[in-house]
Length: 189
Image (cartoon, rainbow, N blue to C red; front, top):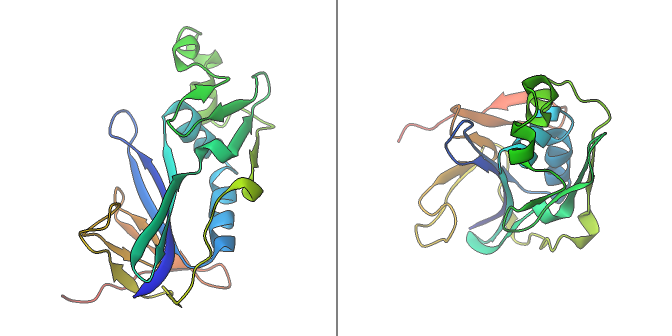
């Protein structure tokens, strides 16, 4: 049985949809993916405005041993706004979508973020406070998949492939050591 992390980005259906899982075998790759997520305004827009869930699940020897929300470990600094934080239940402090909706469209933070019209955004990630368990045993590697047992609390019955599993867009793959995108090859069942 393989050990791996699953980094989840999801937005429940509504005006925006997302269900993206990253099955990775190294915490450095988790860090890189999170930092990449917040390099654009869109990552901030999804987290702050659209109640995105960002969770990390640890599988040791194929068993879910830990799942927690990463949102409480982020602090969003957006020029012109107070520091924005999100607690484990998804409650946002420092930003109100209701108040934002009352502004003219061009002045709304949500509109400005989606149109990449906000400069100087910083996202601080409190890595030291995250209770991430180290992996042990045999790791999931590029080109491999894992069928999560149905009895697992999270993603039970799903097959995850190493790297990106974007169930909304139907994209599966990973970045190799040189940063090249490799599409996942599916086996005939």
